[in-house]
Image (cartoon, rainbow, N blue to C red):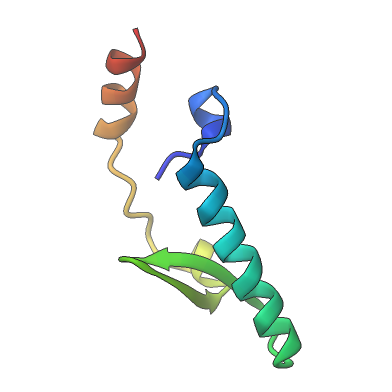
Amino acid sequence: MVGHLQRGGSPTAFDRILAAGWAVRAVQALAEGQSGLMAGVEGPNVVLRPISDAWERPSRFNPDYASLMQILAV
């Protein structure tokens, strides 16, 4: 999922709700004494994963989406 900064535009309502959901889940994790985790999205759910997943798991980003985004931005 490409965020609003990468798209070069203002945040949408979805961007703002998603960021708020991540923030709430991250603060909840800290309040529960958890650390070393990041909030993310899995399907419709905000989930916590180890930060190491960000560099140890292969990316599922489809590079064709970048090309499609450029075509649609014209």
